[in-house]
Image 1 (cartoon, rainbow, N blue to C red):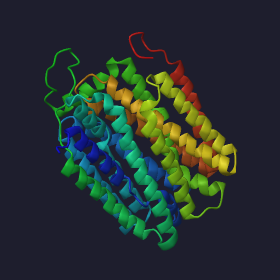
Image 2 (cartoon, helix red, strand yellow; image 1 turned 90 degrees about the horizontal axis):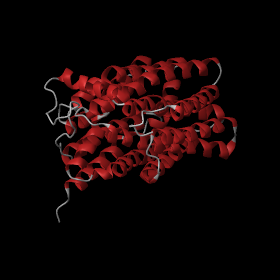
Image 3 (cartoon, rainbow, N blue to C red; image 1 turned 135 degrees about the vertical axis):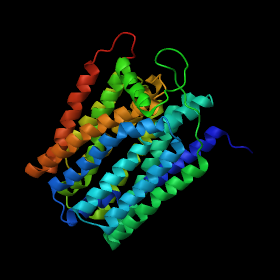
Image 4 (tube, helix red, strand yellow; image 1 turned 60 degrees about the vertical axis):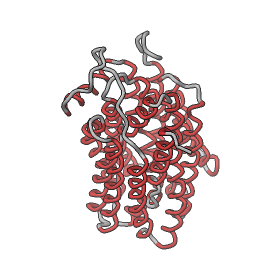
Length: 401
């Protein structure tokens, strides 16, 4: 029996997302760096540098996604990620960690925006665009499932044999993801209309494509609002995810395996949330901002409460965030009208990383001066303030509110 092109792509999409996140060093790399002599402030500068390289490369690489073979770019991203972990394995110092983060950050920009663009156009060209939220959510869930396995196995192995074996296995996983995707996935024609109203082909040069993406953001109040939400509300939990081991070990004296278990619970809740996100009746920026607000309340309560209730609220916070991000990404893709789909998506990603640099540095500074608890409660309050901003944001009557 012949497999439909959409089904074949979905298999490649899910397998690539799962293998790419099967990184066993994930739950313990913050602790690896701390034990290698990296201070709280130095750790925050590493994460800020990670975001900074993305700021520099995100939009240019998104423009590449609008011009080059997107399957090849996504596969190259996995190869580069493997190189990053090689730097950590063979050069476990501040400078080696910095090199790894810079390489990893650049590699991630090759797929950011490009993935969403490829999924959208594949479905649009086969008349199944209504499945975008479903397949995108499943892909996010597959990635979260990969992290669940990585968190449990990585925490266990680090506890038993140290950090070297988890790092070695972390090099293999993105290589496997690249191989699977380049073998199974296929490029597809790009969709979209000219911003001038005709159906002309995308512009002929790299810089014209980039300019077209910026024009799309400027011309639509809805797209601008979504991009702003992605760059602020959507960023907070991404930063908090990197600080989580510090917060957890400060809250209670736990083993490396316990850190992995907590991460696995967070990722498991995210799997459920993103898989079911397409069933949530929230299709406007205001409604999605409300879900981010619930995530902020849960995060703040996780700080002030103790024991299992605190852990449950922490898990719930990340679940709310996961569902909100899927809905927001889907709304962005539905709102883009022009050819430069990957570029527009990368504009949102660039904003996310700019805010990420600020949050990493401010979070590290707060932790250095006070505690990781102080950092976490600050992030929760920031989420609630931003939620109010986007709920009160008034859009033109022709835009979805």
